[in-house]
Image 1 (tube, one colour):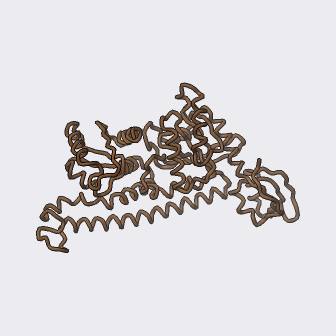
Image 2 (tube, helix red, strand yellow):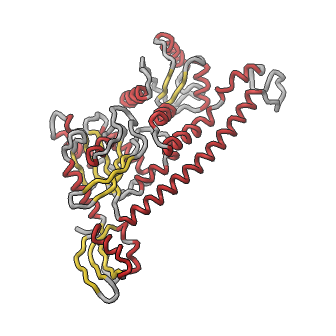
Image 3 (spheres, rainbow, N blue to C red):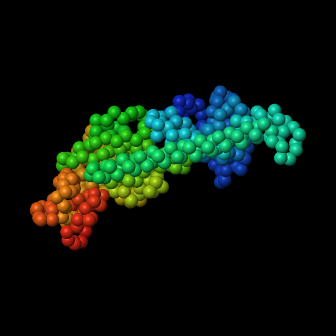
Length: 422
């Protein structure tokens, strides 16, 4: 609980707020009206006055009723936020591309749609104290209720339009991924808890210039760069949005186009801040999120980052041993690194290359001479054991990444049990 509140405070600071206090309450069930109990509401109201606070943030998602009742209890001049709305606000501040802005706007509208009532309470009061108007007649709408329904219709239309635009973005990303597959370039997605050092890692590996800051969600829009591998090949590395506990479902749904980059990647590098006191919990949050977005079956390399901050180097090995029995999907490799200093980068890239090679399958094909580009692809991305020129075409046997075998299926020369390269 304390760690979650500390993270909430960091989120608040990221959003530009100054934290002046906090409080907790242990309840078996949330209060139906105000989430916290009546006595705790009075205590919070007193703290708001004493500390001149104008924002109160809850670490759980509030229902529309909770929000309305808390606003009544704490006063119109106090803004009530929950963890979800705070994260949405941060995302809105950090979205730099059109795609990012569309995704955030969709998530915000879907979150706010059931929470619109407060915006028109002043009209309801003008109409006689309730939305039905001063007449009290059944079925007679006051101006507040009429405006509220109009506003809802506008938002629903905007949500439909945003979903349509994001489907176009999704289709564009799909076509781009297909071109990458045809080009034979493997993809590696860098994932991890927010502020674990993913952007710093991409900057170090690729000489990129991704924004780096010691704050949550400093990077929102994905960045892809080419990285050279030790054996002479290349791979595309993508820095993705950071995960966090209680990640709003609105965001997961809205960011589907972006998160598909993770689900479609050939390999994931899970960056974990080895110095964080809750590193094990953060690792589980990342795994659970990967499961939610359909990427739990991807091969993973676990990069234990920030070893430059450890007082004893063996601490990284101790954490790796702990994680070995708790991770949902055991990592193919565990590599201690420092994205900041560059320590461990050679070993990390060697493990990336080895993991990509492990996905290779046996191929025995005769490629017609008019399809010379497939022979070139085999030379670039495969491991050729035998090659000879025949009347029908170029007969090649060897290993090729599984994702590249599709165009070659029509040219299979013989049958041999498919197996992964040792």
